[in-house]
Image 1 (spheres, rainbow over the protein chains, first blue to last red):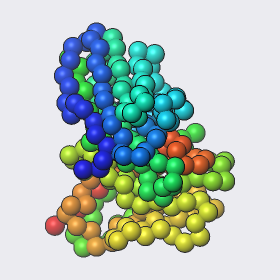
Image 2: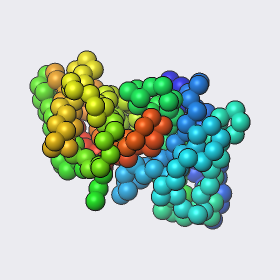
Image 3: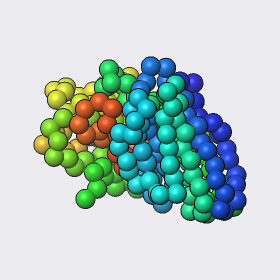
Amino acid sequence: DSGVTQTPKHLITATGQRVTLRCSPRSGDLSVYWYQQSLDQGLQFLIQYYNGEERAKGNILERFSAQQFPDLHSELNLSSLELGDSALYFCASSTRTEMNYGYTFGSGTRLTVV
Amino acid sequence: AQKITQTQPGMFVQEKEAVTLDCTYDTSDQSYGLFWYKQPSSGEMIFLIYQGSYDEQNATEGRYSLNFQKARKSANLVISASQLGDSAMYFCAMREGGANSKLTFGKGITLSVRP
């Protein structure tokens, strides 16, 4: 167990639907990062939150949004889903004091859009 | 230009032998960090090793070492005494700037260890 919890582990939904992915960071970590991993695009950075505020934005579609709550858990909302959104979505967390310990990843949510 | 380049096709290594996985990076920052992650078929991302741009010595973690050549902008991962459990996808990643900056990943390299 990495300490980063992602739910659900698997999600199957239809095109046009909306889903919410949840991430609880490692205890004490203030930063949460969302990544999308697809076969053709590799690991793409979507968005980062630090202590409740958006810190950096990557290749995140307008149909996607995220937020980090006061208890530091984060949610990634994906709407108007398309077949191409099928991917493994990772959440990672980090703490400012551990520059050499990388970023701890959750086990991911595998999203299948049918 | 790509920030992290991993161009090797699928790699194969005999059990108990050493293997080097290549990674080159591109940045104009003076302060950056380089990471390697392992992703087995089960899908989780496992942190292996870190090298800071100001670190003078190559990082080592057990059977993993990082061959850091700053002038060439390369950060190759060396796995010694390969084990069957090392079969996985390996990703090189870079953090530009300070801690709590995002990681940028390469496309990854598939390593297969032969018995």
